[in-house]
Length: 193
Length: 168
Image (tube, rainbow over all chains, first blue to last red; front, side, top):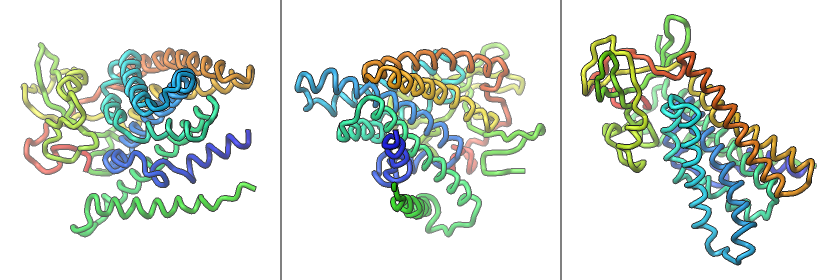
């Protein structure tokens, strides 16, 4: 149990998807101009990453490994990710059409988000069991969303200040992202003893 | 009393987030609106016709929403609509967090009871089904309160700065 908790805390803070593994950077820069869009995107991505990681684990251990089809892993995982996004889109639309109109904008972006595929591939690399894979993917996605929201908060603050024209927009965004990554590097010094 | 470029506090003290929509059809007293694309490519002048996310036309069609045409809107007009700031968070919690947490709870419980990966996977699927059902109930309550429907705020200028998208 302690190992599982450490794995999850590590996935959120130490081996963060964005700041340590550099996955999902497109959305990181693109959807973080406002906190509420970052929250919407973060929650949708967390849901898709967790669901597709569960689906990919089942495919990996029920189909790919028994039939020695490991060479098809990437293609299969991409298919599962696309299916998970479609499932999410359909279920949100079924749950409530107004809710879909509000949240549907983020879903197409997730299909091409490398963080979703990355979480499943990391699970395979770690040779985790179902529950560990599932919780690791959830923690990774939560860490991704956490950084998105923190970064969106910082960018909202920056927007209220007088940034020199040369640094306005993406340049100051990249500088801020670098400082945030440095701050998160501090977590790699956490002692597990 | 502007907080950021696209958020303000209304008379009841609640923060309202603004977005741009275009009137695409009129049916009696109802105006049908299409929201302009505000995604990763937001902030550019071509946001309304951006095709970066695939079949944009069908997506915009799917996201059309009705509005009471009390302001005498005409087809082609761009207007500023608003929703309360907490609504998106509330909607996200119901649509994503609730099913996900129930799914995780069911998977952990199944694993603790049986110690088998198969049972844990089955528990996750069952939990997801229950979670989606509960999300549907929660969304129904929000819809009934009218929390998910954007409101008309004002007309948008076609070429004015800051009126193309409201992300920057």
